[in-house]
Length: 265
Image (cartoon, rainbow, N blue to C red; front, top):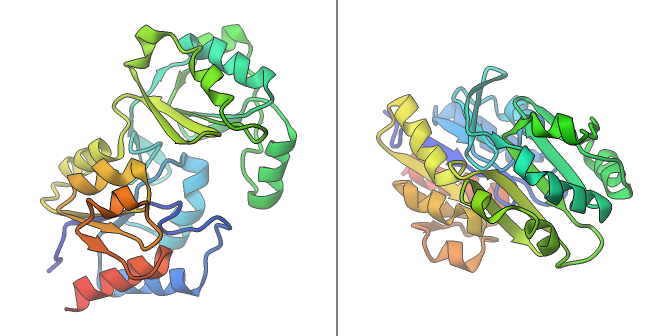
């Protein structure tokens, strides 16, 4: 009998560090999940192309949440998603493009880089991602409904503020704008939120109890929404302050050790 109906785990900073390599620790975690029949899934800011490697590795039997909880993927299709009109963001995207920022936007199962630059090539070389480029013109852009936009400024901190100022004030309430630092931002629909996504997934599955695992500020409400919130050792102090359990180790090793204590006690 399962202790919890659902174990939902963030990816970047929680399961993966910056080099994004899968190690023997991840293999041990995968084996433990299978052995104990833990109802495990992934919750991430990533879109489908960025999730697929982790899905193929962990082979979760449950839907996976991407785009900061706004999209549910299952069996290589979209179960549900919260999208938003691209049209009001045209001026912001044009500004980011002129400043040579990395712009990646998500439509359904597809992810597109808006234009080529040196930073995009770096991401292709290091992680084999964002390889499809679609520089949509103003007319094409106005017809799109997006699941997420990610903007990264590799050159100078703070310039991204000038991009966000181009978003119409009356449209901002329809968005969830997540600032990870002074160089990067994720933009999704207002309903796209890890905590709301967890609640939606629990309702979809008929789950009564859940564990949430995370590492950063955008995981605060996610952990609060769960019955048990776990923060890895490398987590932001503000997340640690709301977590029910603090891992002694960072990353995947911390998650593995915490799950062992829960499921072997």
